[in-house]
Structures are given as structure tokens and as C-alpha cells.
Image (cartoon, rainbow, N blue to C red):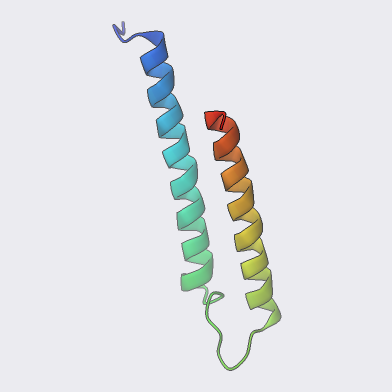
Length: 73
């Protein structure tokens, strides 16, 4: 079937998984923040803005920990 070496294949799968998870995080937060208007303040911040930014920071930290664990850094 595949003539690719297992180490090279595992490395490419690791890259693809990292890109997929990072893009999913980016698209999700962009849609929630921009399309649903939670990233912008009208006159003053609302509870929805605070919840969005808390989610953003918590999910960013989780993404960084996931990528560090994935790449063994």
C-alpha cells in the first residue's frame, strides 16, 4: 500500500492533526466572536463579552497545552 516510512508518516499525521485542531479553534472563535458580535463592545462590555473573552483565553491555554503535549515540548 504505502511506501512511506512509519516515522515520516507519524510526523505528517502529527502536523495534520495540529493544523486541524488549530484551525478548528480559530474558526470557532472567529465565528462566535465576529459573526455573533461577542468580540465587540457597544457602549460598555456586557456579560456576553466577558464570557466570550473568558472562553477565548481558557480555550487558548487548552490549545497551547494540547500542542505542547502533542509535540512533547
